[in-house]
Image 1 (cartoon, rainbow, N blue to C red):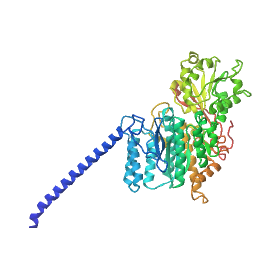
Image 2: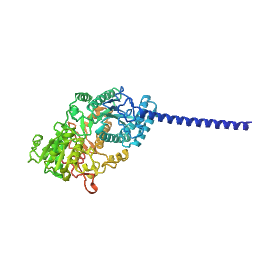
Image 3: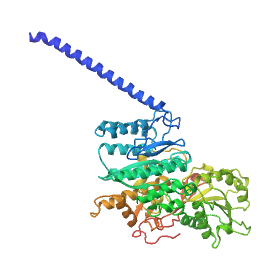
Image 4: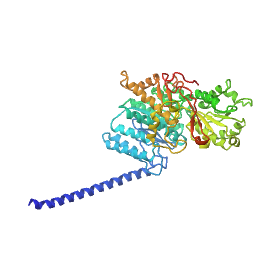
Length: 568
């Protein structure tokens, strides 16, 4: 009897198993269709974001913590912890960054639902597999992982301008920040979260974001008090910022919060920077020192028989660069006497207006009239590119292959054609080979950068994985904070690490950066920090390659390791 009943029972088991398998398959298919529907919906949404053409659609507005974004002047600007995508590249596929940020938002709302954060982590990983240099997604993936495990102790804010001419530089900057974040989180029990603040591309969008940063920090101090500093404030060294009362008001509010700010760049001397003078530090050399160093390099390595200096005396950065270059190149010569353009002068000045392409293009005939062996461009990379384009079609410039364009570190961070690069030289705050060239072991940062970004980008002169100046200085700026946190953590007198704690450590200590030894003076400038000089090769195997010259000015290592450094 028992044997007779076992066959139907087994059949019922098989039938039940088949039903369960069918139900599982249907559920799986439904899940895939739902997910595809989600992606399609995200791809087609444009109701909230006026920047048409990208797949992200709507996004959260500012919440009680200050995190959120708005659309202003066609730009998505604001502060994101990973719940709002700020840098969207429409490469013809569904943006998994959009899905990741959406799921991270759900994760934060549910808090105890870890699978949402894990899904977010996975989508950021998929986005990175499509765009391997997307440091924003890498930062958000770190943040999602830390949030899901309640694991972060400290927070920094990084300011970028993810639009137009600034987007490439800002992406490099985020890469440097991420490299330092990943390194710190991999090697320390306390973890670091990074907030990304997009300032957009106008002074109005920058003011909006600056005001929001103040609200984010104020809200944080009433909650976890985890924000210990800011890396980079876009627009702060521009004429637009100096002329904007609203931007100044936002900076004044930030100054009252007494939070340390580390800029990857050198001080320009702008009025806006002066508002934050008591809390702002600079990794780069200030303009009035860099111009002097550029003149020393020009004398030793370049033709200085006739020198033309391009300057905009109304722009603090250009003015300070040019004035210090002139003072070192020809003692007693000032910008006013240089501009008189006397034919018996060794150095001549040509005035232009920052951001005005016409003043640069029409100036070429005047500049070439002095038969220059060297043109010193005191300005930014965008204007330098305009000038180079005009020079490259000038017959006299074409025929005299010996004429070099010399510029500051700002030109190293620009984008030029190979033919343009071959006529250029510039000072640099950082170069990937500066350690081995000076007889030191290569820093692990170079290899770690390569691992982080998988050989991207495969174009321009960096066809292999090497950090450029922007990424390196952002890495060093972030390392100032992580090293300060480490110093404070090792001090029994500072059990609670706050912005005030970190500020004191930054003010009182020196830091070994990849770009050189960093010790700040009372104005927040690095004291006699290393400067290197690059010439782009134009012959043989050196064509298009940046060659670091043997002369290094300033200190690369700490005073204990390098007791005597060439001054500038």
